[in-house]
Image (cartoon, rainbow, N blue to C red; front, top):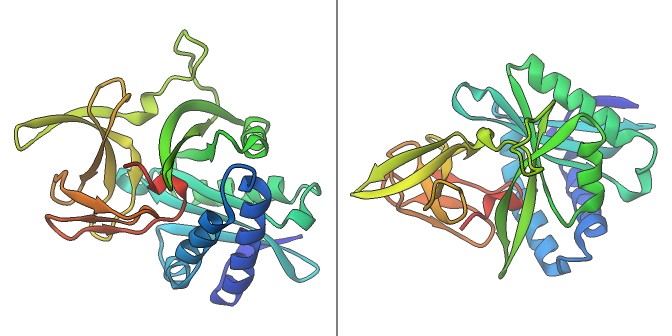
Length: 256
């Protein structure tokens, strides 16, 4: 097996693998139209742009010269100190041979070599296989977030590498959220600096109405400290105050 960084020549194969993988793992609770829309939004020309960015890492796994799997990660938080694994997709016909495990190991290694101090991953709770994969390979569930896909709300599990302190209720410590109270236009919200996505000018952070993270408010723009943002159904965000933009790369873009 050969593991390497993806190139533009791999884009069509990556797109095909993503569709097959999503259909295999998610079709029991997501309709085909939603999956088609996701692949169209995430794996078009925008991925070609990501391949040129130092903020993204896309690795592919080859068997006999054919790409059969890929991982997609990004560097987030201040100083890019967290490597966030967005996806590990393995062609359904290539599953069961250890491809995903080797790809995870190489992805982790390259993220750390590139400066990440922490590794994090998120998986929809309904994807039992995906949760078991991270749980059995050195990651522990540290908390949950809610994601809106279409007209339904789903739970996504957050996994972090290494031991996670227990909060006393059988759940992982969610200190990774790094909540801080922020006042904008006389309105107080709790900004989660651990729930971050990259923007064109600065990151966007998830904002909550309550300190216990039980009610989401929206997005906090790290460029102009505004809460005035708009987002479409696929999770693309634009700050209405400064124009900072973010495009979606997975379900966890849809927090509103």
